[in-house]
Length: 209
Image 1 (cartoon, rainbow, N blue to C red):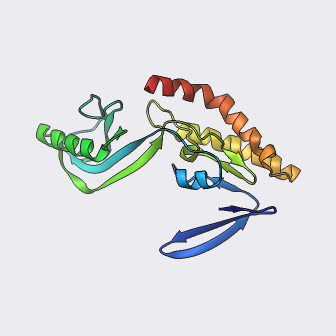
Image 2 (cartoon, rainbow, N blue to C red; image 1 turned 90 degrees about the horizontal axis):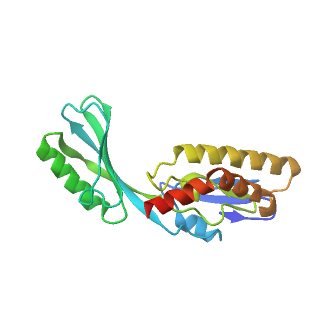
Image 3 (spheres, one colour; image 1 turned 60 degrees about the vertical axis):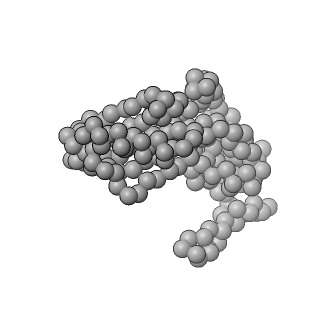
């Protein structure tokens, strides 16, 4: 992302093919991506966990199950969420070795007769536990997981992300009407989401610690 005086230029690479785009403003909603926001001088999110999840076949599981304990997901929790008859998503959060803990959980649930062997694909994704120091700049705002707008207690970010997206849209609308997309103008976005969510996120992080 290159911020110029009159526009923002974004270069993306997909399937080894580069494409360029330009716009008046860019909204970064890419998920947790410390390299991208760090390159823009917005600081870094100082703490995160990693979620690991896989698809499994089940045996008579028709309700969500939650598992806790140091041997399962230290400091966090694991879940088994039915998605269709005899199918479910099994996952957990952990600061360290999420694949190891998930493989152990798979083996345990297989031994208990709750699931069959997990599918081959195991996906991991980092979940921010702290917020980005600065979520705006000249011609840009950062929203959702990319900004650390996540509940530190559960890793959930849908509600926080949607609320912050609405606040970002309102700030961008005002800035576009005034034809002022400077960082000073877009700072209202950060003030808005911090007023709505800041205390909850701070208290949630203290509870997590």
